[in-house]
Length: 104
Image 1 (tube, rainbow, N blue to C red):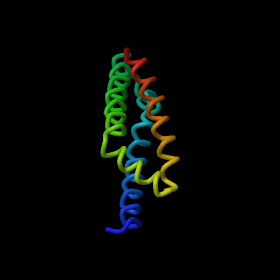
Image 2: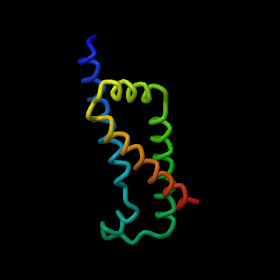
Image 3: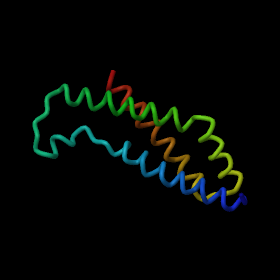
């Protein structure tokens, strides 16, 4: 497989991961209120616990050796996907820290 083919495959993976991660980041504790429901405090507690669990899992995956290898390859090949994905990782860490704090 050529370096270019490998780059395209990895960039496609990063694009897919980015969409999935952004979906998790967009989860909002006020969703039920916006739907017109009147949720109790347990709904919000459960929301933050679930969001923390999801983001902790995402963070663990982002820091796994296979993902790090992909990102190193893309960095080494000057991919335009590298820097935005690194920013996304920072966003995940901030959201994860917030969710873990609130869920405590």
